[in-house]
Picture 1: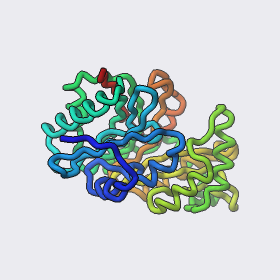
Picture 2: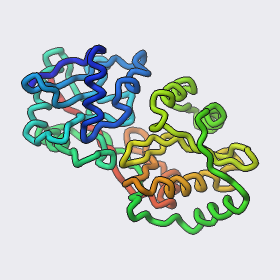
Picture 3: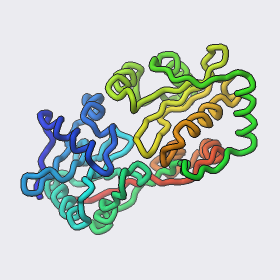
Picture 4: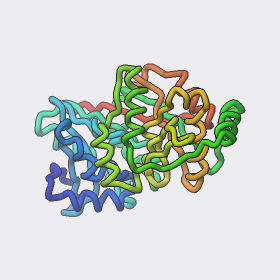
Length: 309
């Protein structure tokens, strides 16, 4: 086993491997990772066995710590379908030896939840256990199993019916400008802002037009709410959700989600994302209650520390 630092001239090989892997997502493509290369110092690895590429490790460095990957929703080891548990152990050993030789003291590992796997891919979790990795953060995410979804609460169902009766419609919009103004306005009340700027989300949309999609609830062409969807194949993930003041009164966001859950019913999972803050130590009870009222139930996103020095 040999770990080699990713170089730009390997971008095509990297992306080809992501496409054929059992747990790779489009946000691991170099076009996605590199959109914020000015903010993160990339130190991704490509792992070879007898000159054959057998795994990828998207990562960035900060001081003496390796993160997998701070600029992405998910991280972890990207594996092919034929990877064995034994090989996973050897791969982690190669990764640790590589970073240790460069003087890094710790790896912070962001595991990919099983709902995003194309095929079972938790060999990495066993390897982490064997390496005495420490679970230091656990976020709780709300997910609907689309093969047997739990019904919306009665109050949510009533809101959806009222929206339909009032003539509200859900449209897909390729221009994010109106919605980004709404989203920024809503988030500013919590003294925060979207992770992506308008220019960044438009650029990402251009690069991944079928994977990043915006759905809006409008009435008489007035924007009331929106949801940005990241389509990962087996799982559809809501990246950004926001209501206008009028949208909150009418239940416009519930109306969009009801429509999307129906439209994506051929997938395995519908993910509402996390409801935790402060590295999982604080649960936003109001936020998770809204997701649970739409049928969401808990899946955890785990983060580990591996001491290597």
